[in-house]
Image (tube, rainbow, N blue to C red):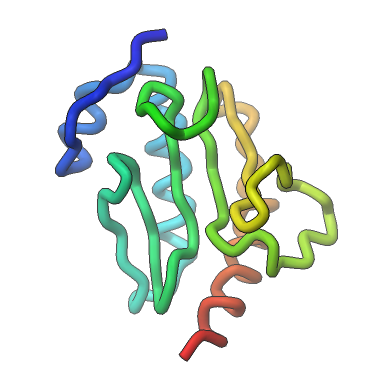
Length: 131
């Protein structure tokens, strides 16, 4: 797996650098997030990957091709304040990070939109509590 080590400034630049299977996973995850976040939330490239925020960080989508994501393959979908979510279905992996909880996808078919939407709604509620 080749990793890219350049400053990524835009989605087209990121998509150009990703292998097709990661690009498809990133695209599907981005669409789910964008369709379910309030209009007041924004997307930007931060840490070289798609980052979504409201008052604070909500979610991040980190392909393994981009260094420093902590994964060797697949695409990580992380919730910035996952430690504050109930996650009653135990969908997210807690890993070693005390704050960001995540799920790693290796194919588009693995993506469970219903579970992601449920967690995003909970993450939005957490975000709305920040001052």
